[in-house]
Image (cartoon, rainbow over all chains, first blue to last red):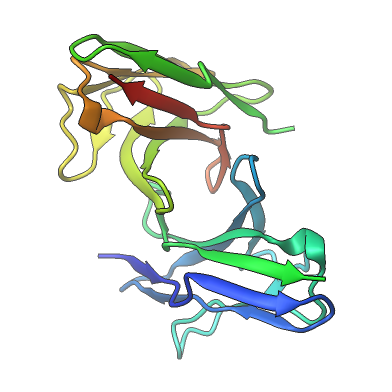
Length: 109
Length: 114
């Protein structure tokens, strides 16, 4: 079975502060990990995926297989980063996504 | 690119009636579409995986006779909530695969059953 855990329901930081949204996963095979973001009143959209190893909007995430983690990081948070962030895992050939419960990030001015 | 639409965006219906929700991939062909349900302040729960031209695969606990899914073409999948009841009120979201490994999400449909 595949499972994604986001331990923080809410995370509040000040503008310019570093931010880290935690994600841990459980999967017996070789997973593919994603971060999705949902801004207020907007649809869910892909932020980044581990195989791309890219930085989007200043966010990065590294897959740590030893710790089964895929934490999302940004060195300097901006107010426009305030949103709901979901970590998701895809495993197997059917490309189903299993989502974590999400973390609501609030960046205060 | 990779835009997914849903129609309607919201619907209110009486208990016992059926409601159809459409999911379209506007600028790409989607072999696979997914249907999710999201309760307030909760995460997305996968309901079923829909493959064009074949029967949908439902997740454990999802009644296939209650939630009918049809994926008649590479750009359209429909979810019909049959004999809806108040407990079916929720936010239903679809996604489509533009290639074999990335899902793009629709804006969602809010269903309220009176």
